[in-house]
Length: 332
Image (tube, rainbow, N blue to C red; front, side, top):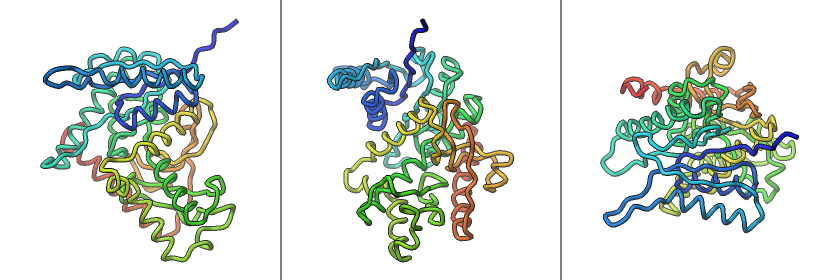
């Protein structure tokens, strides 16, 4: 009789988003979880926060009857301590450096690409057959960096972008119409930022186009709120969101582990026929993709209206400028 092996999901970065990813995976009993982060040092003590969070989540899982293992591991900025990545099925990267006063965009980009470099090199070394989901921002640029640094096939390195943006768009539509989320079908593509592209032409509620349900002014209001959905939460809480981003990552993880063949907007590398269709060569950017046990199994081609095409071009150019900048800075 064969022994069942529960999948392993490693979460690198145990901040708000990372711990919520781990927590939801445990609640859904999807996989064993390994969490990685730097210890927090003060003048008097070193706190092994990641070990504490892992133990707390393990006890939470016990309280609800979820049989998963949860472990926390200390790592160092120079990449020591990542050996337990071994045999991971999926590695979720949430680690990153927040922008601080006086820090230029280039400084921030350099710090975050270097963090991605350290993690990606360890992933390639210790778990070369894993699937990598990048969450750290700017997600499209850092997904590109992770893809190039790991050397993995493009099907196994992609970013969480449009899943979150689409969830926000659905939430605002649902709030406005007082209708179930399950009846709302829409996609938000492009870069994960101000240049994202909500596809109104294919969005509907129970088959009724959004353009029939809202006037132009209300649609523009909903689109604007979606684009600045993250900023709205920062204004309200003083910190970036983590419940919705964490849940969005877990939707992707579940689609992979259960081989659901679910179509989600992910930041993926475009080349060949796909790049030609989307007029976006050598970039990672959000497009509809079928997720299954092999990672990205198919890129879905959706037509754009002329207006959406212009928004898309702006989005592609925004991502390209970031990728070109990390090349100019010799970061990859």
